[in-house]
Length: 148
Image (cartoon, rainbow, N blue to C red; front, side):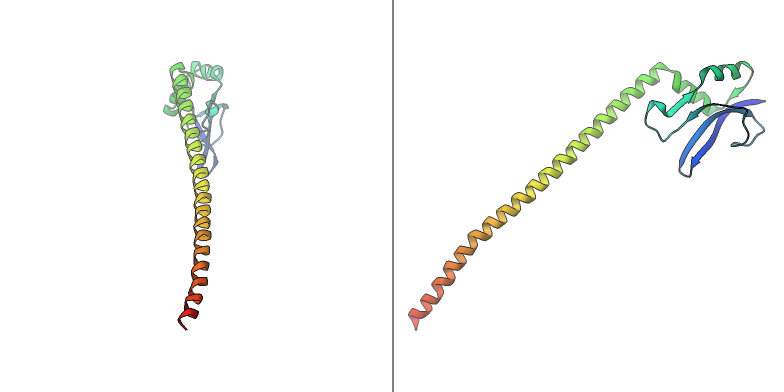
């Protein structure tokens, strides 16, 4: 019996799957008859799933059975409603990311300007206190001289 299923590739914790046609007795990553597509779950774009639909339909007509995952990928990649929903979700997530970046930039620029402003105000206070201290120190010896 021929099955259409996923064959895993990629590095550890970075999976990449080939959609393959193979004898069901073969091991998961064993010898395949034909590679008809790929699935990369690490991508966040429409290129995540690529299937040669003509070859998939050909093998189905010959009696090949789809695994559960491949049937889901087929449905997910072909359904117009899913494509529209994915595009809307992507647009919303991109907008959220842009807002987060802008908020982060604003907070960084505000904190840096606030730091500069506090530094300037501290310098102004220090400079204002310094002449007062100088005047006080200048007056103190004069008073001591008068007492003597």
